[in-house]
Structure formats: C-alpha cells, structure tokens
Image (cartoon, rainbow, N blue to C red; front, top):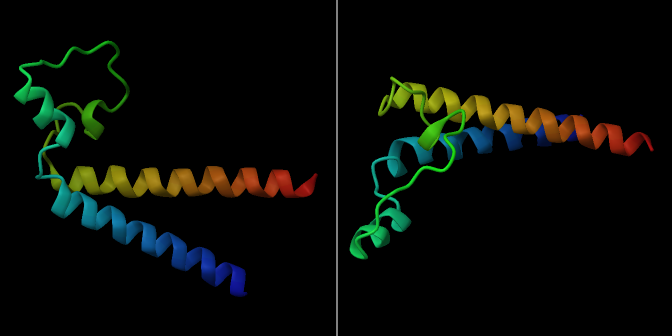
Length: 91
C-alpha cells in the first residue's frame, strides 16, 4: 500500500513539474540558442526527429498540446522504467 502511494505521489510530482515547465519555461529562450546568436552561428539540422523542438508539426506554440505531450511522455517513461524494474526484479 505504501509503495503504491509513493508511486502515485511520484507521478503527481512529475506532472506538476511538467506543468510548471510548460507554462513558465516554454516562453524563455534557450541559453544555447542565445549564445549561438551572439557568436553569429545558425542552426543546422542534421536529423529531424519525431517531435522537432518538442512540438507537433503544425501545432507549434500551442500550450495545451505541449502540456499533453509532456504529460504523455512522463507517463510513458514511468511505464517503461516500472516495467523494466519489475522484469529485473524477477531475476
């Protein structure tokens, strides 16, 4: 029972961090981008991943989409690590 409660608290805290990150930090400019601009460097894409700049193509800047992606990613990472932990514990 205590383990289940701790897992639930961990998920809730993680989702709170996602909410804070999406709402407050998404509007700030990335430090690496800022320094690159100071040196006159431009971005050169070698490979465009599934979610470039952590946004869905066509829905850039949409706060609710970014929140949904962040929460879904958090839950997927939790499920993956939880499953791996269970599998490793059996050995």
